[in-house]
Amino acid sequence: MANLTRHDPSSLARFDPFGDIDDLFRGFFVRPALLEGQPQMQIKMDLKEDDKAYTVHADIPGVKKEDIQVSIDGNRVSISAESKMEKEEKEGEKVLRSERYCGKVARSFTLLHDVDDAQAQAKYSDGVLELTLPKKAGTATRKLEIK
Image (cartoon, rainbow, N blue to C red; front, side):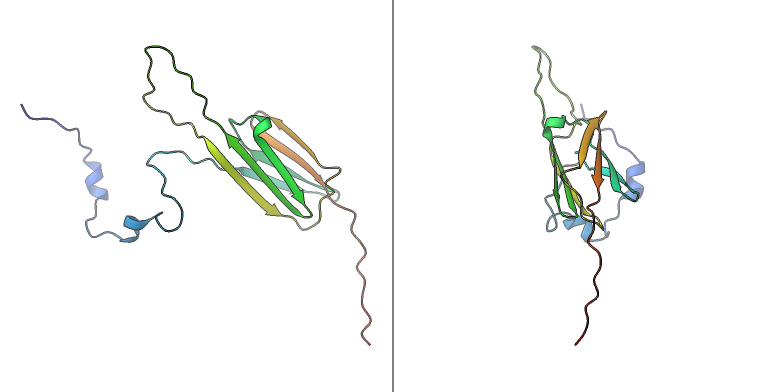
């Protein structure tokens, strides 16, 4: 008896035997190639500013607050988080597919004003990191006299 294979006819429309050669090498020289279907975590964020401070809302779902680090260096802010895969196997049960991300993700950005890191605050609730970054009192601009 012959083996039967299920085939999606719509995939033929996407097949191009003379397609772009870039597709063949995509990801090999730029970054490590991702496995097909493997999710990639990203930090998505909103940044707001008023006269006294910046407010950042960063989406970091599925991460414990102990696994999030925020560093401030002048006007540069860095956020990093690590999601760890927890193994939970029950007797007689096997995992058929897992789409949860595990690994480390980071994002850095530069602001127009230096941040007063002594007054900065961070809160993490429901997968959203909220940063309140007060602006450092700036020094007055001084004009130099040219001699």
